[in-house]
Image 1 (cartoon, helix red, strand yellow):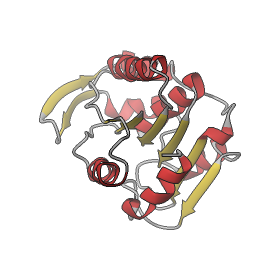
Image 2: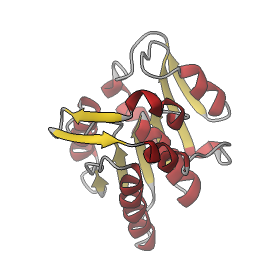
Image 3: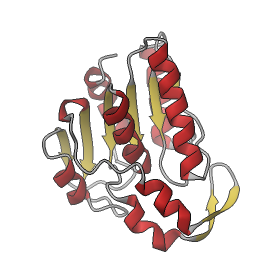
Image 4: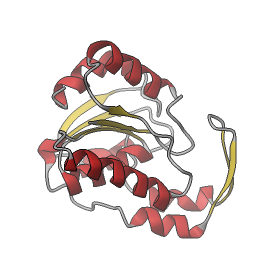
Length: 190
């Protein structure tokens, strides 16, 4: 199974998600590829991701994750907890520390959903914090120094013992992501 996990206020219709889906369909059509629209509630999102992961594991499928931003934070928890390989794209390291600026009304332009970020969501996200990466060989971390949303140095520090791909410039969307899809698939062993 390959599970693509989008970030905050994103969806399977984001550029990276669409590029990944097209690449997998073209080059690895035999792979069970999942790209769910995550609920806006962090607890509900992780419940869904854990259910998909547990089902795949019970069926004996190899576990593979690609997570972008908040999705990278979730993918870290899943790979550390259940095993498998994960590629993290400009991952959030401590998203619960950023929640104050998002509390209140939110709008997801991909889904046209209006919803509320509540103070309890910060605590829900913090429950999935992996303070230390115990299995660094499970991770490939893609970072661009021009990320305007997250400080890439936090990810450099947390994932220092993992395989890192660091590019100068770029932005939070990870400019040129599609050019790394072959490398990503080789790492997760498709």
